[in-house]
Length: 255
Image (tube, rainbow, N blue to C red; front, side, top):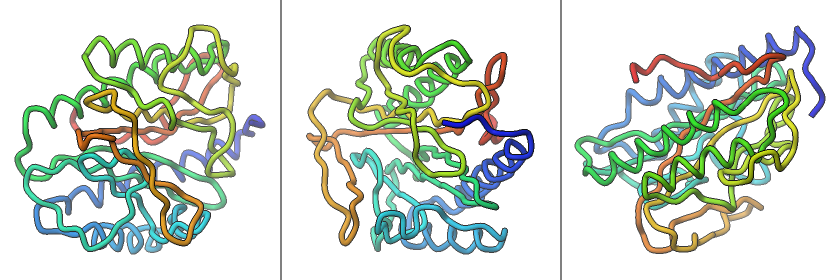
């Protein structure tokens, strides 16, 4: 991707902070009894109130403003009339367009009281993201990110999804490089200063192959674990600086 200019970095910061703010806003409504359509409407209304646009809406035919992936849904879950119930986990993936720039972030939330298994896979997904982010600096590669994620996850007894990963982002939603959750040190694409990418490992309880399904009237696919086991994900948009990185979608969740 082409390095951003100073004014463009400021605009990316605004888009990413609005995405993080939106995710925090909608998180306050995540509780048993709410539907994923209601979550979608909250994201849509809040985004428009900030003079921005929800990037997923209409993207390659995707029909909603946010992705809501529950329990065994790995990613790209489409909001509908599904009612969240006590014990669910849900990943809410928010991407915001503000002044032509894209901010992308997601987080897995607990719905009411969840099982220890749900807590563990969610904790591992969060830790995996942090491990990957630590490798984001100029001179490193996408393989360094993927290696760190996969090593952490396998040592915890879980499995990183290989088919789907992070991506370049900025003035477009998805661009190069692909940011995998597995890899070899020093391999893959070199990380360039003053570009942005997402780190977003998707972590499954088992190694069973995923299942993919088409989103109606679009070219987007959504994915489930092959055996109904749980999957969790976290995502940040990262700016690569000349000496390291900056998490543009950071929000103080009290972790």
